[in-house]
Image (cartoon, rainbow, N blue to C red; front, side):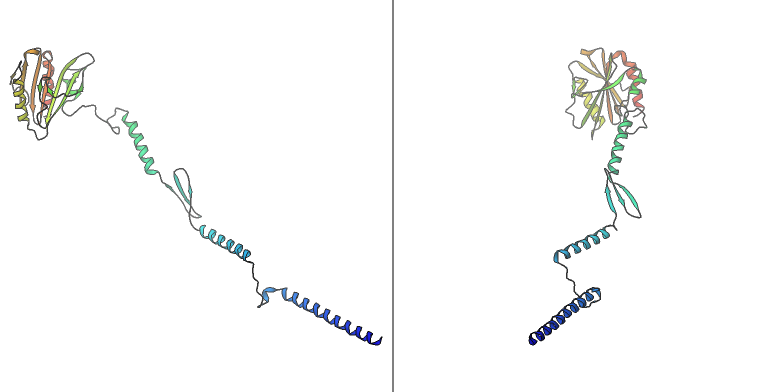
Length: 268
């Protein structure tokens, strides 16, 4: 009985010592963890997924901070507006296009008028060889000039389309009621007017019902072609420097045509 009591005491002492040791270890361990940054041997390892989140946040923050230092374009319909903390600049990317459109609109608007100072104004003069004001001043007061299609014939019966380098324009002096006269304008590149004039004389004299009358009353030289099949019509050819005019008209308008030739001669 005495031995059992001694054994119990020893066992109790051992248990107490063990308990005290555990308590002491726990207390010391908690005290060390109270300020983990003071421990040089403390290592704190983050889980891999937690490291990824932290790095991702760091990278995003860095990119955002760097991006904020650049100018950011804001797109609109036709402009790019560059904005920053200190400056603001507007660049119109469609300035040339808008300018071209505006110019085109302005040109279209201006050409609808009759003011010679308008943009794109085109004179009503058909050509430099015969003008409407000359025709009116000559006595055809209410008439105008109309260009007709040239069909290869001079005075409608003399074929001249085979003359090399020849250019012919044909115009009619008329109003809404009557045809007063026709004018042929003959020019040519590298073509001497003296040679062309002689060729016209020869061709007009070769007609079955025609003959020529070289009066030389107008310009540098002139002749009439008398056609017996058209006795009431005059056919007059007049040579100037660099151009030949042909006039066909009823003989009753001889005075007006004579005046017109005088006006034309003032410019040659």
